[in-house]
Image (cartoon, rainbow, N blue to C red; front, top):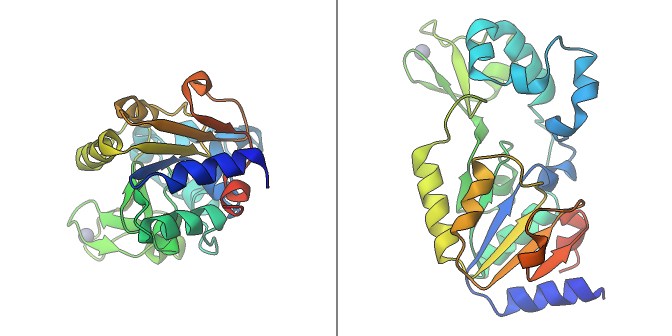
Amino acid sequence: MDDSICALRSIIGSSGNIVFFGGAGVSTESGIPDFRSTDGLYNQQYAHPPETILSRSFFDSNTAEFFRFYRDKMLYPDARPNAAHIKLAELESKGKLTAVITQNIDGLHTMAGSRRVHELHGSVHRNRCMRCGRDHPTESISESDGIPRCICGGIIKPDVVLYEEPLDRDVVDSATEDIRNADVMIVGGTSLNVYPAAGLLSHFRGDSVVLINRSKLPGEDRAALVIRSPIGEVMSQL
Ligand code: ZN
């Protein structure tokens, strides 16, 4: 077995309070692309970059175009958890892992069986009427045309954090608390360049940080272990 996998096994083996922090790379192996890395592709079909379309001001001013992009690029009803999601759920059920903190909005950690999941950027599986507050299933958006409407006539808005919107305070607070109490922090599938989410890591006071990512990350010199591989591939070997 690879030395780095052995080292990761040993870190996990001696910890009882791991927190996992993950980003888009955790879901790419489930067939969900990172919209930030494929700008060029979208620009062929949309007049604006994804960061613009996924902003609150664009949602408010170009609502129908927002939903055209959202149905097309943000919803993956057939996506299933991969080895990383499944292994993390297993570590939680064995009492090794305390929480998953994710920047993803696809709900795959919950689908894999993880119970304590902090979804910093919300979830496509929660949708709420902006007028009466009624909850709606994702199908209310995916199976409608134009602007999805509640029976009261209000617009149904996905519970995802758009650019220009703040993160949910309660989610950030509980994620911060779990990071503060963790003895091992595993960071995977994120380039750590999405703030303020990435800033949460500065609250870690524990023993070891493990970084698992395809490309180089900031702070590698302070990490106990760095693995430059896709996260699913690493987790499937544990
Ligand atoms: Zn309503």
